Image 1 (cartoon, one colour):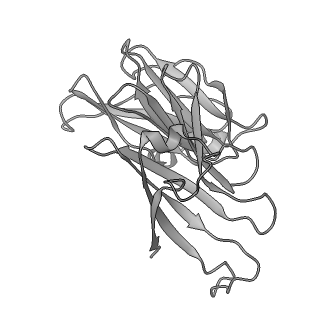
Image 2 (cartoon, one colour):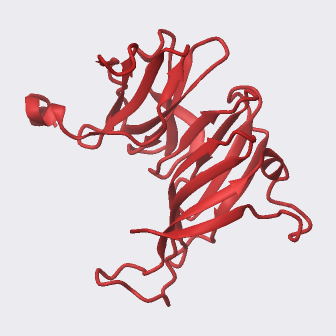
Length: 244
């Protein structure tokens, strides 16, 4: 790691995006970035619609990558990041009070995370929505959580995918989510069935790999997992697309 830190080419290469960019104040566009080699995050931002770019101070922690950013009502920014570091396995968090230029120390949040990506967005009604694998091990469970107090509490939660943990569990990961004009929500994520009796591809991996699209609304989340009548909108409308 120390050797790479002195290599100017290595420091310039390998920066990637994952979560959505964020537009604040109608002017500053923030693009969350991370580096797999150095295993930390930073923010690229522009105030002139991409003519010039700047980078924030690094968000350095114990393996914090793939940041997802929202803006609070008071103007401050908050990010949750994938945990690629040591236990406890939690989504990592930080905040900024200068429009993304500098960030607080990275700390553990309350959200379990098994080293997988997550996305946090602010809805038009002010609620926050988080989609993630809420387990410390495995990617067999994917949930959406809803907060009406900017993440101080999460009153509603519902599972998009849930398998019993074990060798036959599927993997549902790398989620992305957005709010449509009509207020409904569209989520996409990798959908990998991992049953041992499935046919295998030439690399020996399960053949059932695809990208899944789920379409649902806030009422579906707020109904929770214990909907009594499965025939009445107990599952989101889903569409599975074959991954190329």
